[in-house]
Image (cartoon, rainbow, N blue to C red; front, top):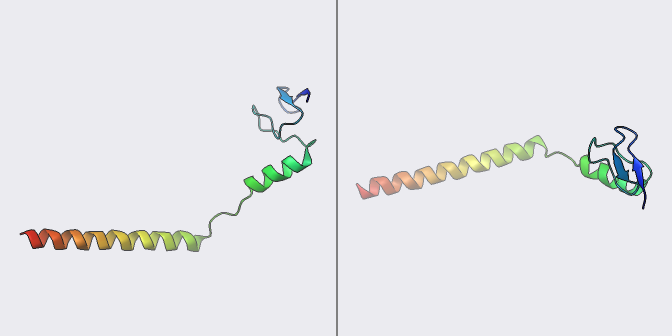
Length: 77
């Protein structure tokens, strides 16, 4: 394990590191680690339908809570 200069910012980094902690330059010498880090960075974003589904679910829960609270309020009066 040796220290090398980052080609981007000249910060001293390990030759085993995935990327430079200072500038984020990806170390291409360790291809398997670079591929793993790229997979993590390019994870699929949640589809828009999943956002809509969650929003509708939250709205339904909110409406049910409001109905229960209003029922309890009118029951106590």
